[in-house]
Image 1 (cartoon, one colour):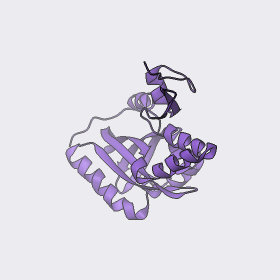
Image 2 (cartoon, one colour; image 1 turned 180 degrees about the vertical axis):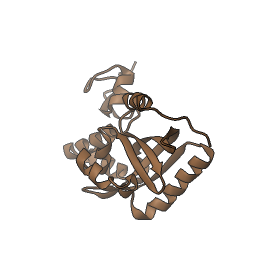
Image 3 (cartoon, one colour; image 1 turned 120 degrees about the vertical axis):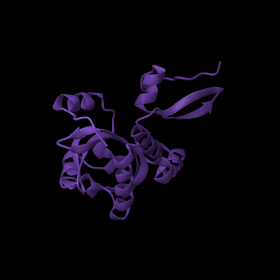
Image 4 (cartoon, one colour; image 1 turned 60 degrees about the vertical axis):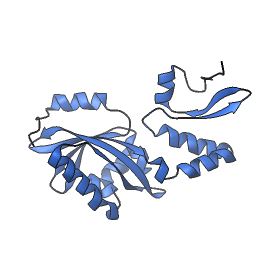
Length: 194
């Protein structure tokens, strides 16, 4: 497959347009080199940016649980062979939880120094991770609400949790992309029954 050479200027443009929880990776043999990571990305692993860099210094695959690496490597190979987008989930190391499941959507975006580049966006994989715990905790009180809010704010698409009170649909938790879509600020009541 012939890929476009990505210049430093192209990389800077990609970085500037990158959403939260995104990264740009270069595939170099068996290693996955991180050329860029969004500031929010290490939080998916419960890490600081420095901890994330240290763990992934040899390869970003070091963040993936060993038993999930072969399936991920195969998905990357298939994408490289045919140019198809990657859409998969796997478990990654988490500093305090041990491991969490993430969802990866990635696409080949060119090459640099003859090596392919992937533009990747990660999200928590709620159906397969702690979402049910988060919602159960949410129903249990303020501590659960904080846990759910943290969980929802990690998702790069518009997500909200709503309750019905006095005939009004009231947002309990909404993340930044949803608030931006609705044109409201944090804590504003966005929905009322007509």
